[in-house]
Length: 202
Ligand SMILES: [Zn+2]
Figure 1 (cartoon, helix red, strand yellow):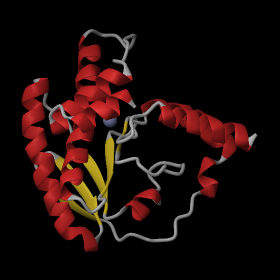
Figure 2 (figure 1 turned 180 degrees about the horizontal axis):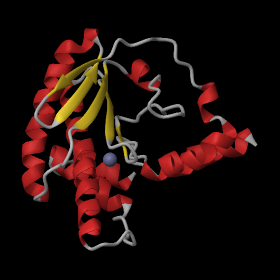
Figure 3 (figure 1 turned 120 degrees about the vertical axis):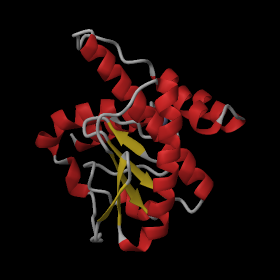
């Protein structure tokens, strides 16, 4: 049984872009499976983090003391992206967005915000159900900024679609396809470049 589930997990991961674990479909599936199969059990958490919170006008940034500088950078880039995306989407977010940051990929993989192992190569993700963004730093500030921007495109798109659906008084709407949501996220986080094109074709 576990091997079937493992295959299912791998198959689901394969439909995500390389740089992003945009996990809303997955969260839905797992929340229905979790109680039955204890996905969390094979996940090792061997470090305790002393979480601190940095509050900015639009974000709550969760970090641990060693990441103070990184948290400041995240605050700056998140607010920078917020200003641009608020205009592009013509939408204001109603609540502060929680950003959980990890100073390296090993710490990120231990995150207990989702109950399964995070594959190598996932650059960050947006938790659809909780409206929370979880981000690792791979050592490159350029990538860190890009991932923040990428995930915030998802946050805004999700909020805008929800707001429009609510306005129309319906929950019966189709979410845009992955090629569109990932394409827009890459485009608005980097500009259209060859790397983005590779992600789309992947
Ligand atoms: Zn994405």
